[in-house]
Image (spheres, rainbow, N blue to C red):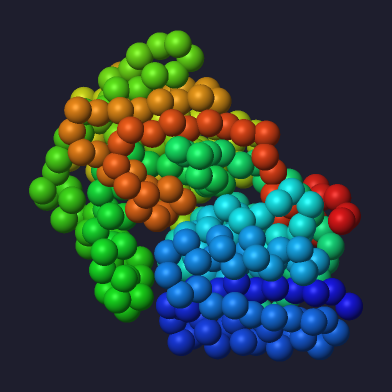
Length: 296
């Protein structure tokens, strides 16, 4: 019998709550399961830190933001599970985890783990990506309207994305990496190959690789934003050209003279400046058996 702690986002939809209850019912057949609902931003991290020593498995149930918060409370030894109940669920796409209750429960109980590599932005852990500029401005608006996000989901992201294109703002960023200074208008620092859900940003890294890639977009315009977004939606690899710079670096510093928003794993984080580091920290993620895994 395993002791399982499930930390879930209290603001999930009724349908996702139904899925969660089905998964809990399956897990409870032969295991001890306790659930804890988040009450505010940052609460999932606190819940994880308080309860991690009492359980064999910590599970984050929610979107990428909830997963991020729980990861910020995780150690390297305790097994970590995901129940994808969010809008984009990029982490679930990276690990090939579906919403099927029986399959999710099977993964959580499999004992098959694969190490995911952790980065930090201003000393806060993240496992997917950090965006500076355009996409962060979209996330900032969405997160300030959580009720509309809950009702409309991805459609609300799309509407705000279009609105931000109509009222386009060109940010001026100064980036320091590999002892060089770069100027750009939008930056995405990623450890994930997916973006915005199942869409693909890159083929050069994923959450199981210790490889942090930075894409810098220069001379940005509405047209260039649309062109890059369409390329991502079509799952085409972003390639370097005279308006896209690709950097591989474990230490990035970004600043600006103006107020520029930041998003981290799909959640609004604040404003520049930021220091991003590729760390040696890991989390032991429970995954499907067919992946190249080790047994816990």
